[in-house]
Length: 285
Length: 311
Ligand SMILES: Nc1ncnc2c1ncn2[C@@H]1O[C@H](COP(=O)(O)OP(=O)(O)O)[C@@H](O)[C@H]1O
Ligand SMILES: [Mg+2]
Image (cartoon, rainbow over all chains, first blue to last red; front, side, top):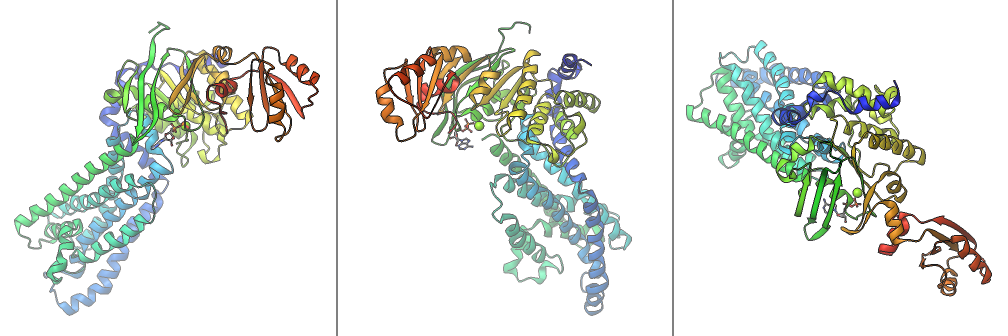
């Protein structure tokens, strides 16, 4: 092929794909195109993601089911709502696994997408809007969370700790819980010009206390009243309490079930909105 | 569409402020279809800022801007669908393969996979990267990365190609390969907007350019017009050693049309440079080195601002 006809070919042809259709299509599916790229990047780590998704629940099941669980179950004799300790902690661990999976997708990768790889600028130079780019990140994080949570859920189910017919509802609660934290995290990461230890600090000062004080390992009511607010604020408590209601018919007031669901949805929605706004601020400056 | 006077970009009193600081200060220009239009200016002149406004990613603070007949404030994504962008800082995905970079980027435009696979092959050929199709971007040289970014910018068959400092940081050979590719695109009728702080690049690539400094337009025209308007045909460059340049300059001030005294050399502007050198010798001055060259855009910039383009 002569070089000139080659250039012509490189520069034209397939006109059918162009014109207005090109951008209007990106308009509808833009968020998904951004997510596609995140998933492609994730593919490079797929073996470690799958390995942790399987190893992590196994580790908890063994430590809490066989280890602490058998001890607690013998001593407390079913004081924890008449179910095994593993059954009690299962929904909380599930939500916590979701938080970790989403956090990994919305902390460093978001800051890096602006600062190191600059991939968000590349997407924005194409027709994608900032809110679509933020949504793409969150959609990819949700997909990862769903995978992680599903593996965990199946294991818990196999261990018989999610006996309720409505146990399937544990899944969306856990995913929403991760999304609530992750979307706020994405908004923060989009505003950071430098890490400066922020993520490590959030891990230690927010995620870890939340893990310990959200009624994860014992009922929130065990806590003195003046510290229960951590649980009330924490999406992990809402997801865990909701998950206990859905997973093994633990008694929760109907109005509280609704509050749990509403809180999880509201936080995810608020975080998503915040992330979209911060992406726009950063990309359009 | 076939009208060659079709205006692709029009900026009127275009302004960009960052807080109190004015990075682009009321500039006017327009770019016609098929034209290679340049923004020449030193670091910090406001070239990238202008580029980002044209690319419909950064909102203007004042003035009017029309790209392909549309307002970027209203129709940003629509405009961007018809642009190809080569940013100053590479933003290729270094974790994935060369050909996947083109594919992924094409997806942002909503282009179907089958079309993209074919198109990517042609563009890699055009960018002379066919052998690297399956390599990771990490393994490419600087020049190859730049060519890949240009190939990527062409994936949507853009009406306008925006290039922000396309060859900064490249070695001379890599620059020439790149210039050759851009020239081919120009021959194919692709409208280009190029920023650079290299006067040779502006002379090579641009039909018409604006010289900008501190956010303002200093001059506008074709490279030849600008040189003719603001400089002489030739320049004699003389070095007497840094401590003696000033005294020599005093005694030679009447030679040529104009003189610039730089820290390391004296420039004497004249139609005939050799005649200047002869006159210098006949007055008994023996420069350490001397040469005669044609005037360039560098001289235009020096004349307009009293400073060099590249410090
Ligand atoms: N995001 C920003 N915030 C504040 N100042 C900026 C920002 N971007 C650029 N500037 C300033 O605007 C001026 C022009 O920058 P730029 O357009 O990058 O210049 P050039 O591309 O010509 O080197 C510089 O003084 C730069 O420091
Ligand atoms: Mg610049």
